[in-house]
Image (tube, rainbow, N blue to C red; front, top):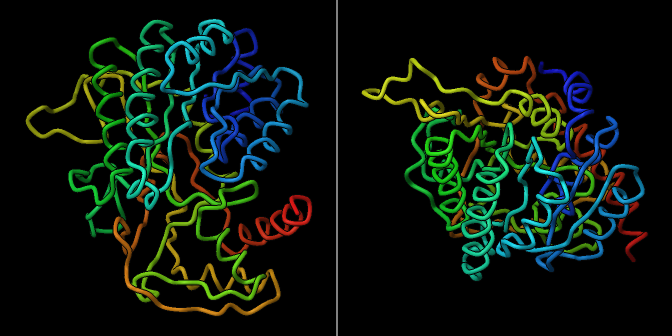
Length: 352
C-alpha cells in the first residue's frame, strides 16, 4: 500500500497521526498533506527562536485553519509535555518524528541544544513509543551522517562511522537508539536520511534562503570551499511524497539478515534506513544561477575556504526507496527554485 491516498483511506478510523516538529519546514508540509487527505493530526513543537518565530507561527496558522488539526506546544526534552501530545493523539498508531535542533554550524557554538533536543528529546520519543506501541515510527535522520565518506553516490549500505559535526553525530546516534528500541521492544521504526531539502516555507538558515536575501539586498554571498561544493538538492514536495509512501510500510524483521556480513541498511530487528534525495547532485553555483534567473538580479560572489563541519559533495543512492515505494524524487532544481523564489518574494513582502 504505497499510494498515500490509499494509506489515508486505510487510516481514517485510526487515532490522529502525531507529527513532531509541526511548526518546522518539513513538518508543516507533512501535516498539511495528511490534513488534505482527511486525516486528523496532532502537531507538537516548541516553536523556539533558532530562526524567525514569525515564520513558524505562520506555518501553524496554515494548519490551524484546517479541520482535524490540534497543536500542543512543548519541548521534546520535557517528557511530560511530549506525553501530553501522545495522549492527545489517543495512543497514535503512526508517529512521524521530525522535530530536532537542525543546522551544522549552529552545533559548533551551541552544542547543548543538540544534546537536549536530538538526544534527550529523541530518547523521550522512543520511551513514549515504547509505552504507546505505535504501528510505525518514522523519524528524520540526515545525509550528514555520511560525514567524511567521499564515495558517491552515498548508499545506506555505506558505513557512517566518521561524522564531521556534532549535528551529524546526534543523527547517527538517533539511528542507533531507534535500532536498539526496535530490537528490544519490537518497535517498527524507519529512519529517513534527508538530502538538502528546500522549497517554499523553508528555513532561513539554509543556503538557498540566505543567497536569495543577499542577491536582493546587493550583498556579497560567500561560496565555501572556494565554490567547489555540490549538493543533492531535494524539493520538499518530493520529500513529503517519499515519506508518505514509506509510512505505511512498517518494517518487519529480516529473517535472512547475515550477522557475519551485516548490511547497515537492514536488520533482524524491525528497523530500516532510507536515503531521501533527488539523486542528481548539482554544484552550488547552479543554485546561485537559478536564483539569479528567478530573482532577476546578479549575485556578488566571494570564494572562501571550507567551514568546519562541511562536506564537499553529497549525492543520494535512492535505489532502496524506489524498490520499496516505486517513487523517486522528481522536481528539478530549476523548477524547485522557481517555486521557492515565487513564495519567498511574497513572504518577504508580508513579513516586512
